[in-house]
Amino acid sequence: MSASPAMVRAPGRVGPRRRASTPRALLALLAFITLPAKADDACRALAGVALAHAKVESAMVQPGADFPAKGDRLAAHAGAHCAVRVVSHPTADSDIHFELWLPPADAWNGKYLQKGSGGWGGEVYTYALVTPLNRGYATAVTDDGHVADGTAGFTVGHPQKIRDFGYRAIHETSVLSRRLIAAYYRRAQSQAYFVGCSDGGREALMQAQRFPGDFDGIVAGAPAARWSRLMTAFVANARRLDDAPLPVSKLAAIQKASLASCDALDGIRDGIVDDPRRCRFDPASIQCKGGDSNDCLTAEQVATVRALYAGPMDPVTGARIHPGLEPGMEDDGGSWRLWILGGEQRKFGFSNFADLVYQGRGWDPAGRDIHRDLVAAQEREAPYLDAFNPDLRAFRAHGGKLLLFHGWGDAAVPPRGTIEYVQDVGNFMGRHGEPANLDDFARLFMVPGMGHCWGGPGATSFGNEEVPPPGLPQDADHDIVMALDRWVTEGKAPEQLVATRTAEAVDSPARTRLLCKYPQVARNGRCVAAGNPP
Image (cartoon, rainbow, N blue to C red):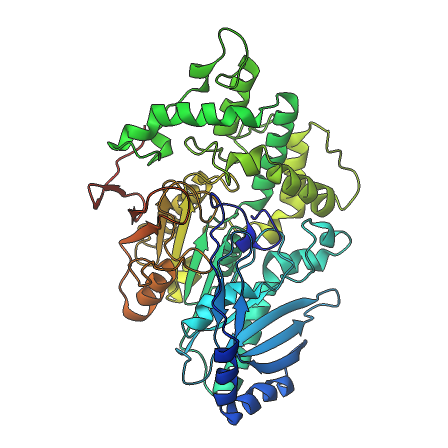
């Protein structure tokens, strides 16, 4: 998920973090002048590489590129590289574009890293390639097979584009990029990694499930894995709010009360709920007694907040459609304010059903048959978009390593869904003769105080952002992508990560926090067994 076609632009930080960009024109010119002619020739030669159902549209050496600060995006500079643009047509209705950046041969670390998309995709978002390129990776990103307009309109009348978005564009980019890497460097990559969050996290899990040999290591952040159910939950939440509106002005009172009830459960009052599953906050505790105001909730609003925490139910089967939201970050700018009351869930859910599921006909946004919608979604989109298959035996046999992370304050993709997936994988493996303990190939890190993919009141920088904030440590103890690389190449599995937050990132003090391998939690600077939540 994302609040925009490109996941990296999704609001989720509390306020922007802008940096002035140092002029680099002279350095870029010098880098371009000193690039050996043979590198330029080798880059241009990629235009002649024969690719199955695909074509290299352009291949040229770029001296370097500045990415100015924009919105919540940090200023960044990409080093010199060979930029390759490719279009692939695996079907007559497919139009998959991707861009591959190749560092100079003497700067290449011998590895390939592919980035995931976000939201509905639809953009070759090259900003996501800056950090891996500068670290020496050959790196690529795709538009998922269509042009972005913020909706699922591209799917109407185009069943192959649904498949492209669901899984095929990522696989095509991987296969073709590796072919071009071998042509450029005259040798194959030693390792291949995939890194994505939100829809990119869904894509990450899809790779492990459908194409287990594509990547040696995968980072799946906040994966929108059970897409069909998540979109149904979005619509159910929107209709609940239509029936019993919740004013934005009430969010501060809700968060204040939930923190008062649950913040100190881990022994520290720091404005963060460490494990919301232990929280027993009841919004009825602030129900209005002497008239409505912003400091209290009406009886109808109490019911709405309870429903949002619980997650919507299928009125026919009585089963929960998708896990609900967690307490503690209701008033955060990238949490309920954006996704619940700001309309992002509504936008995604309504377009999903009107365009993708019902193909522009037969769906009433004001309708109330949520069971019908769920059944239709599971029939018409789940086979191509859902990435909740617990069978990771082939990925494990390939030697693949999987790192997952999820923010406890995520209001876009509620976090308990990821915990459920990891548990399902363990149960499946155990039933099929595999070790039920996933530690040898898969680990999950839950992040207190973090919203969707990044941002929030906690320490939330651990290599999960497209470009790391300046001044933060960049090593395998502080960066989840580098931790993955170390696990794959050195066999050292991450037991914990250190998340950091700079004082200037948002209007609050700097802090660090230990992130522990689930189900452990941090206590007094150590990761310890959490026990079962009540």
